[in-house]
Length: 261
Image (cartoon, rainbow, N blue to C red; front, side):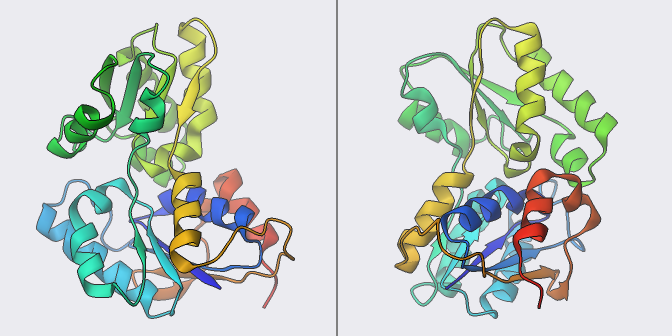
């Protein structure tokens, strides 16, 4: 079987690793857009144009399912991508994990890009799944870009700024951008340094990986032989994992467990 994932950049790594853990024998296609990133500042129409091109490049590899491992693309381009590819290719979007985060009834903070924070899309999810709990929307300017370039100083600065906007009593945080999952432990450390008690982080990688397997008709087989191949596409060109990806445990894991061709 083969699962494709798409994003503007390396935010797809957490979901790719989640798929690899569920099915070590699955081939993976990682399709990104270094020529067009970042997508966040673009207009919705332009985001859709770029995301659709990345999706079509992934679809040309004939996967069994496609994960849109990007919150921005899921907000703006999911209908267009589904219209172009389904029903032949199941398409799984990424939704911030607001529903499970709010299930415990405790206050929640949602860390997201400035474009997503306060958006009708995010407010709709809050109204639907978290109307009975206190929710703080925290914009994180520059964090996704810093993660994408593996700029350690910029990551620390952006996390510190977002932590300062997070109420100290909040112990549950939704990571509303797939890039943020790559620095989850650094976010945890920053919040726990100024707050009281352990922190619970809610990402989307595990959920979208499981949904992709369901949509493809596959079942988890975590004990399968680690035989899955890795194809990397950058703006449609076959490539290698970018150097920044190897700055994270997820990128190194993918490289380490992928059989040599």
